[in-house]
Length: 389
Image 1 (cartoon, rainbow, N blue to C red):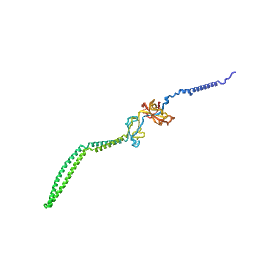
Image 2 (cartoon, rainbow, N blue to C red):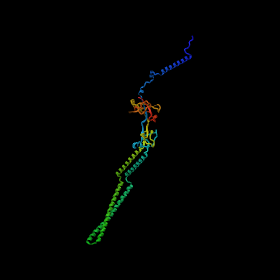
Image 3 (tube, one colour):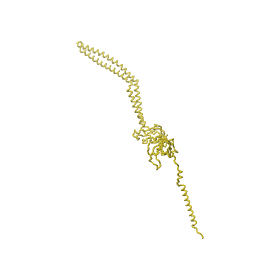
Image 4 (spheres, one colour):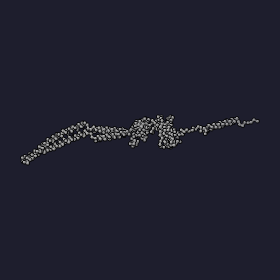
């Protein structure tokens, strides 16, 4: 008896193919599980054991700044003018990036020309006062002294003339008086008439008036001679009071000149120290704002201001070494912890990680870079800091 197959050849073939596919899928699953499944043994072998120095390393974010920070150079006349709004820039004498020296002029304000004129006027007054003092100390000119001496000689010559005229008139007066007295006596005796006595009386009165005039002339000549002598003495004499007054005038003029120079200097914006111009905030014609005129920094020596979490600050000390990395320069830089801050404050350098805390309380630690040249132009750049124990 011939047996019939349970299924046709085509069905058997389909069953075989399905079975093969099922075995392949099962094998791939087992292989994948053996490869990707977590293994406590392999995990413990692959996870590095933290080293002591890695555990003690303090990491933080920070920013770059010049030595001493960014100096905002403002207008010296800001407070005197009632705020920054009273100062306007006339000329800017430097460019951004320029290296400047301490006390070097950086900009000129619009009050410079007016204050310069005042200073020049005060300087001229000083010279005038000094010239007057020298004149007083030297006394009168020799020509003036000689002229006054001539006046004295003339007065001395006039006095004898006046006295001689007086003696002449006095003699005539004495003669006229004697004649009048004699004729008056003769009149009483009846020897002469009344007309004779009247004539003698007229002569006496005339000579008496001439005598009075001569007396006044003599007195006037004496006064003129005395006055000429006193004037000569005053001209030739250098009085201490005159010198003191002239010296006081010079001192007042000098004080005004110094004040004018101080006011003029306030119209010039100067560099408080050596450094580099980081930014110009006020161009010619602009009013000085709250940012001042120029930002200045000592970029020859750069620092990192690291914000260390308050929980880790006890592991940071001056003298520790630090490594600094950033996106704006290749590799890493090194430095030394220079100073640890004394205040706890909120962090200012924020991480870009959205899950990172933004209200961390930190202490600022300043790190002095070993080589500042690569980052001298990167003030305020955000960096990462790792401080070794």
